[in-house]
Image (cartoon, rainbow, N blue to C red; front, side, top):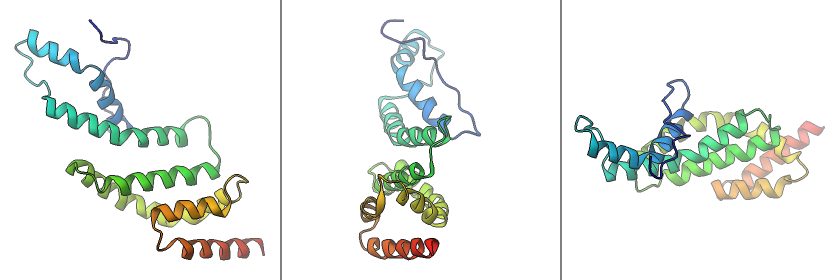
Length: 172
């Protein structure tokens, strides 16, 4: 077909893998012109997305892409070390907080819902991830301070002091 990369193909949704939502949207957006052409040439095709629906799909794809990338990094075959996990979890929290203020209600609602679930795990596992990151020679406390200050400047020093106390206890 003219100007369409037919090697990619459309992706199917897999109910047990949330990342498939990103792949479905990403592949459908690539074939946007093919869907429009089909709507013109096939009168029985009545479910062609409108321009507004395509824009929403692009926004949703843009929202999901960083989560897709981070999930592949963490769950991929490269087996990242514990110090990498903290940075990815921190990026996820930053993205969720940022998108919770989105002008798009769907993204705003999704971010809030995701943040509620995410907080359960983040609050519970944060300290051990941070300790792994602090032990990385490239990170240290200043990098953690920067991360915490981006999340919530009002609690940054309290969290750093808590971590220092726990690190001292660990080494004693």
